[in-house]
Image (cartoon, rainbow, N blue to C red; front, top):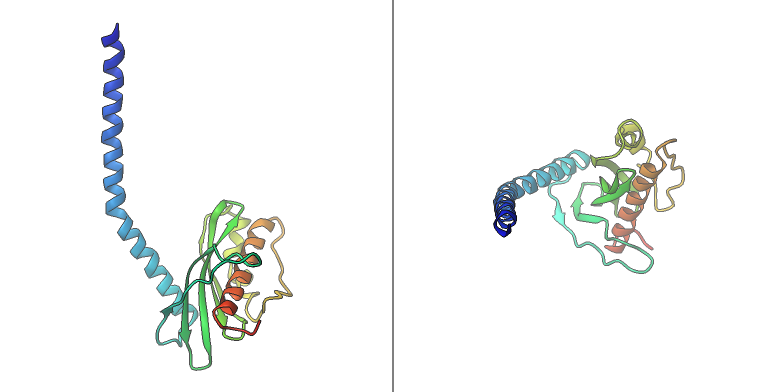
Length: 183
């Protein structure tokens, strides 16, 4: 009786070990490729949004405080254009699709004004939440400051719209914390 009970458990355990090892090997092989692809998409988006910049330099992400949470910022860069210094902030947002379902790039001038905004990834609801990736929605942020006055959310996609709004505000505050606009 004991033998009939132990053998199937041992076989299942061996299968689990082999499958886990295979998954770990595939993850180890694909992780660098995925990271490189993500970095290339970020570089392409920066060149698209700030074409006059000669280079993009990594900037430190500000420390979160009781008043401002910067934990959603994934990376931050600075660039000099012929007109001004800008901050490029890659920030995630929690849309209707859940935690981190949205990822944005926001370009903020040294004066705290949004120069451009772009959706990098959108794993939100097709049809409604995905509308935050449309150029018309993104373009409304250009020229806004930290007050974000004039913001117009998408009816039926309030969570995704507000996630975008919060990401833009976080980017503006991060630029200010790095020496951008006067506080």
